Picture 1 (cartoon, helix red, strand yellow):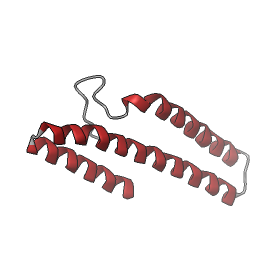
Picture 2 (picture 1 turned 90 degrees about the vertical axis):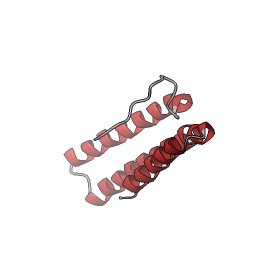
Picture 3 (picture 1 turned 30 degrees about the vertical axis):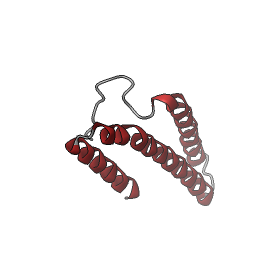
Amino acid sequence: MATTQASEPDSVGYSDTKDDYVKRLARIEGQVRGIKRMLENDTYCIDVLTQISAVNKALHSLSLGLVTDHMNHCVIDAVASGDEAVIEEKVQEVSATIGRLLR
């Protein structure tokens, strides 16, 4: 999986909300551990699937927040720079990311 790395520590769009995202991920991690316990305890399959759906929704919500932060920071910065190549690159990044999230 290819990733791009920011050149400055505060250059990521989620810097201001990083702690919130980390807390949300910790809750999601707990939910996933709960699903594992449910399987180990032979919990009714519909109940397991309900919990899997909840985790998927939580991850989707987290993803949407990150995409929004990216657009509000990186894309807006690119537009402010006036550099057409950078603007195009950032718009393509967002488009590709949304495409991956919708699959």
